Image (cartoon, rainbow, N blue to C red; front, side):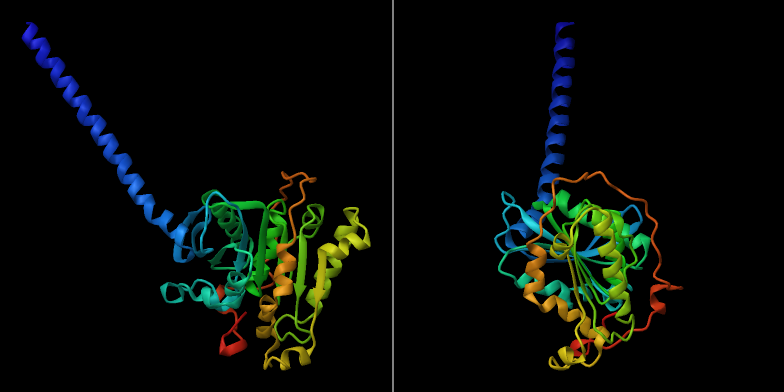
Length: 315
């Protein structure tokens, strides 16, 4: 009887040991699986053609980490959305947004930043939610200074990001709205003191410069409603509408496509990076998702494309 009990006990111990070894092996596998991402973080540079299974479907994106990335430090985060020509149209379009100067310019600044750029499939409420989900993903997975999260959008990407910033004004400290129309609401942006830089060519062929003036006027009124003085508003809200001569001097004669040059101006990018999130506001101020589709009907493929700098189309 004692021999039988001893045998049973030995069997139990052996089984327990095997189970523990299996668990340890599983944990080791998880650690090994995570290791390449950690190595990429240390090396810095672009990690291309990633996917995130988000609440509204698959999000295609690429991200950039600065050389010498150190998780013990925190970095500003740039959320940059390109125009129509660099959106997601299938595998053949993968990574096309990384050639856009609105991505590349941030990586050349003296201050190291983390950057993420999505290739979304529309420029409406869905894309706005996806942009914000992508920002939150980066905050959760990398060492981001949450007081210095910035948005940048051009054309279709501007339609998206104007909505994204209005939906989550608690998330962003500043936003560059380049060559686009404002599809978001205004009051949440002003109430949360989000700084906004609006850039549009005087003779933009696609939108027309009046849309930029209207966005500026509506934001200015919203800042006033929020109790800011004119001098305070001037620190947070900028409008730049260059004439044809400005673009012609750069060899640009397509003015909508040329609107992307705002991202080549280090003074503008550094103005954005100088903004910090106010800690005196209610960060739980989330508004409803009432946004327009920008007056476009049909799918993303229904929009025409225009020739931009260097022969690229930016829309």
